Amino acid sequence: MRASLPLLALLAVVAWPGLARANGVTAHAHMTDLAIEELPPGELRDLMTDPTMRDAYRTGSVFPDSGYAAGDAYGEIAHWEAFTQSYLDWMAAEHPPPYETDDERRLVAFLLGQASHGMADQVFDSLFMSRALAFDGDVSSLDEDEEYWLVVEHEPGIAPLVIWAPYDDLPDVFAAEREGHRPEITTIEFGLRRIGGVLDLLQASARAPYARTWSESPWAASSYYVEATPGSLPFIAPIIARYWQVLWDRLHGTDSLERSVIGRFPDDGADNHEVDPRRPESRVMIVFGHGLDAMTLTRENVVLETMDGVAVSANPRFIYGAPFANAVLVDPEETLAYDTRYRVTIGTGVRDLEGRALPAPVVSTFRTRCAADRLGDCPALPDPWTEPSGPPAGDAGPRADAGPTLDATDAVDAASSLAPDAGAPSTSPSGCGCHAPSAARGARWLWVIVSLALVLARRR
Ligand SMILES: [Zn+2]
Image (tube, rainbow, N blue to C red; front, side, top):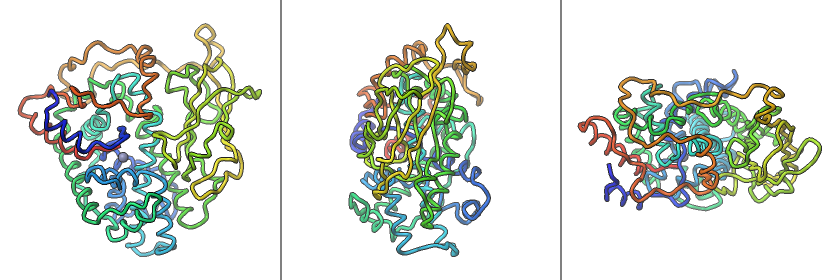
């Protein structure tokens, strides 16, 4: 539909400052399910595969977005490590290990759900969303669209959500966090009930907008569930599983910053890294299982250089300018040389949010791709993405008229000044990411309800 006034008004009321878009709530709960499969045998896996823990970790997995749904600041706060640390501090004081009773094990499961959500958003936004913008030209409704694709294609079985949250203690955990915000218990209850409603609606109605949204964002739709695509759901799941193992150690006081690295892009020693700094693929990401202090991510402490020690101008940062986060991004600011080995070093000047310095530098190396006329000198490049003819699930219908297909190269160039995580493209007055479904008119009302619900649950 053309953006209706009520919808725009709602959007204006509930939009979160600095809001960008990442995963939807179904995707978050599903990534937690995928991450459980990645856990090695042991106490942690035993806890997370215990069916009586499911309501707690599932509620935790959608919990951060419930704050957006309630229009309360706790939603943004609950996305980040400072909240995770506050929860860990509360656990250490009130519920130290071992975790033997079901009640205490649920407290752990809820924490791991919350942590899954925050980590998934950081990695998805760092690696996937920028490429979606480059290929598809618009990420303003990516979070919602991904929910439709996931529900239709993978039937994740998340709804109905049975809510379990440590309501009585959450206000104190928030109050002890660095921002000192204390939400009301009733506000948190309201937000979680609303998220439960969104999950139900998505489950019931994802087919109506499925084909249209798939055709409007063919790169994202055909990539979000491909493990080899950086930032996809199955790419993120093992990072979450490794994060949980660090958090388990943090709960038990046996953690070490020396064993904190839980994910890298590219893999250490990888070939064929992108040389063009305007392309998001040129980024380097190193993810830690501890929250690091953004103030220590200086150009002295985080260095990109050739193996011969020739420094490259590069910007170390967290997405959204977060003060404490896990995924360190290093953006080259100049074109890298072809077929050259580089290393990124995160030095011992970098500290975690408790002030502890990295005990040893973390180093990651990669080799850039070869020039077009020297491709034989490098391992074969992956095949370029080609637009699929249509969505894999039935009832695709004709492609919505989204205008000419973007040429990927042009799109990357056009998007180079539009890093979505440096301030998401604002919703256009005539757009709001809410296009008319090409489905039958009868389904439209349902779609409108879902859209309204999603707008209310507007999330990062
Ligand atoms: Zn979120």
